[in-house]
Length: 361
Image 1: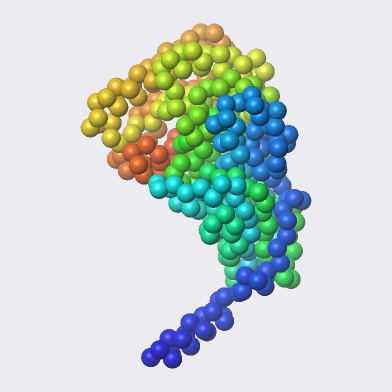
Image 2 (image 1 turned 90 degrees about the vertical axis):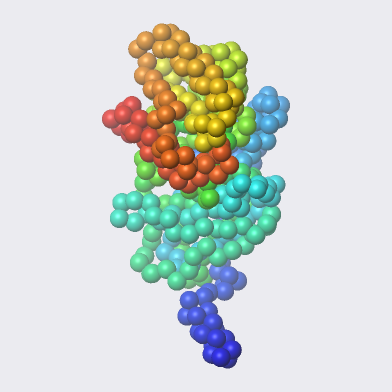
C-alpha cells in the first residue's frame, strides 16, 4: 500500500509539479507600478514622499512604508509564476493572515474582468514561492499583482518558466488619470483582509478599472494636515475620507474643516465622500462603546454640515454608519476590523456612491 501511495504522489508531482528552481526570476523595475501618489519616495515601494520625513508624525511616516494599495501591472505568456521578495519588518498579527500582512495576490484579465489566480504566501522575511503553474498556453495575458497590506518591501522578483516572456502591460486596462484617493484608518489600509486584493480600495480599483491611492494609516488616520496637502496636489475623480475610527470628537471638530479646506483650495471640483465610523458588532452589548462611536459620528455629521455651507456648490456625499454594512454583524474578525465578507459589503456601498458622483467613473 505504501508503495502505491508513493507512486501516486510521484506521478502527481511529475505531471502537475514544476520545480521552483526551474523558473527564471526577473526584477520588476521595468513594469508598471500603480498606487503611488508620488514618485518622490525614499525607496521605490512606499507611499509617502521623502519630503514628509521629519514632518509627519513618526507613526504616519513608518506606516507610509507599508505597501498597501501598491500593485504591479505586466503582461506575460508564462505557464508558471513564482515570486521572490523581502519584506521590511516581517510583521505578525494575531488577527490577520500572513498573506494579507506581507504576501501578494495575482489577478489575470479574462473576458473583461479581473479574475483571481492565486496568492504568493510568505514564508518569512525572505520568501521564494511558487504562485501558480500548469497554466494553459494561450499567448500573452494581462496581469495585476497586489502588494502586501501591512509590511514594507525591500525587493521583488517575478519568476516565470524559462521559455516564457514578460513585459510591461500592452493594454491600458486601468485608467491612471483622475484616481480615487482613500484617506483613513486601519480598515482603509486593509485590516483584516485575508489577502491584499480583498482590501476595499483594491476591490474598487478592479471594479472601476481606475487607479486608486491608499492613504490608510493604521491607528493614525487623525486628519494630519500634511496628508491633506498631499491629497490636494493630485487631481482626483473622487476623494473618500474614512477617518472617524481613529479620531476623537475633538479631533474632528478641530481638524476636519481645515483638512477639507486644504483639499478644496487645489481641487474645488473634486467630489468628496465622507464615511462614518462603521457599526462594530459588540456595540449592541456595550453601551459605553456605542455612545463613544455615536459621539464621534455626531461630530463628523456636524462638521459635514458646516463644510456644506462653506462650499454650497461643491459635490459632497455623506454615508451614515447604518448604510455601510449588512445588519447580520458577521463582518468583523475582532469586533472592529473587517473580514473579506465585510470588505465586499463596504466596497459595494462605496462603488455605488463613487459612480454616482461622475458620469466618467
